[in-house]
Image (cartoon, rainbow, N blue to C red):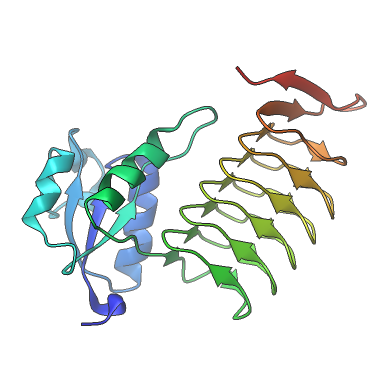
Length: 219
């Protein structure tokens, strides 16, 4: 059985997981279970799906029989999503790459395992997306940009051509990163910011109207 035919186990029962579940169901994918300790029946998209309450319950399914989708959302300064991914990878499970039907992803893009491209996002030719990174709703990643692992490019963020991000970068909603900029590991770009120079690792950067870029340490 090819990867495209394997059923899905969704990790998480919150908002991000519901969006991914909706995309997968629209594409006709079979979701055999949702792993979440919380009541998932409050979200209509999960109704009728089998619920597993603990991560360890994944052993009901062989790593060769299912693919996982990480539905844990990524928040600034939080490593939960990455830790969850590592836990299941160490058990031998593989992660599906999810692309929404309305996303535009060039055929000349490299997508690593577990990457997620959501509704109306645009990823242009020559882009590389690292493992487990999220390109969220209506975000734009322009040509020849390189996105590291475990990045979150939030809704309507724009990365112009030849942008490079290292691992664990968070780019807030509506932010703009001009061409040729490099964003260091673990940095955070505030929502609505315009980034016109490189950003060091583990810093938070944001701009306000008519003000210079502000940089603060990220403890």
